Length: 235
Image (tube, rainbow, N blue to C red; front, side, top):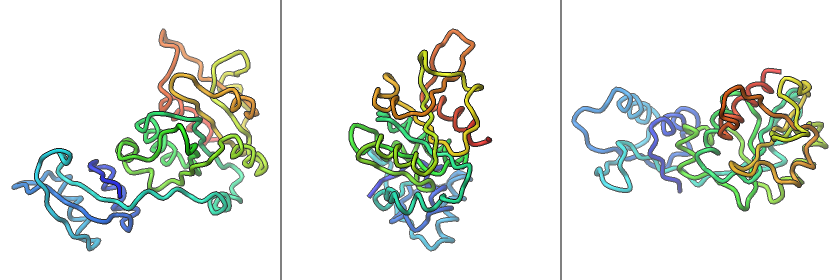
């Protein structure tokens, strides 16, 4: 069971995956905010009962949702779901560590129509309450896969006619504007500090980077990922 305290995440799940919610509880308040009233009204329309809780740790938010344990997508079902999409974009994360960054990337990916997010099982951020919060619930409406070996997963996607495009800084990287308009793309992002692992770099077909004009010479991985996903998804 996952406990979620983000109003935005709870509302997203109520609107798109209400069957995932096990229970809701709300602080007794004399005058709920219009936002909270709207969410409570939606929950009642869906036939969900709403309990109550007091304002104390760990439940400090006005509305709490208990959601079924997160379900990662199955590889075969997932691949078949977009087999006929000639412009599919997939996001792969090479041992990203921060659940907040993972959630933010899932939010951007879902909003931009990316077909799924691949993460390793080990030494990687997973779908936690923090990821739910940062994604405003989007982790429930985009397929997310946990794989034992990321590079093996990338090779399998090559067999499905995907081009593997890594985001990296270095002599082998080309500016984003020079990246060809590949039909099907897996965008691979690395860890917050170290970037892509050498083994992942060698699996990529193309390396790209975002040219920066200011004095800051790097972007947060979730910001960089959003820029790259937007560029590739509009091709």
